[in-house]
Length: 90
Image (cartoon, rainbow, N blue to C red; front, side, top):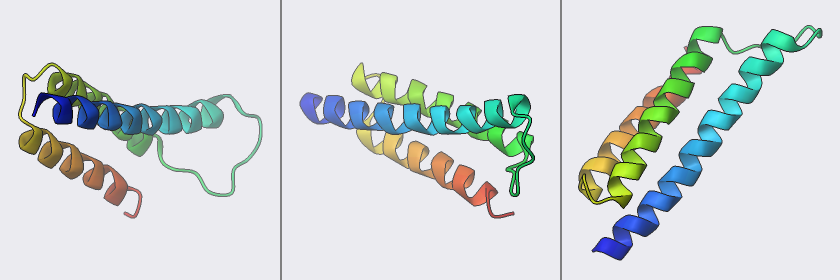
């Protein structure tokens, strides 16, 4: 079971780092860019998704260190990421 936790934790870590970098990139582009964007994601949703990604990164690290079970980590991670995705469609 330990190797499954490590592999799943690394996959979750990669997904969540990409999640945070994607939303951080858009936040920086919106704040710094002199261009007018046709479609912008609200700042509150970007900041929320960055925080969600950081929480999920912490969960992935806890899974790698075997401090949390695989089932609990996946349920929390998928739930939080689905909430983050659904916030884009408000």
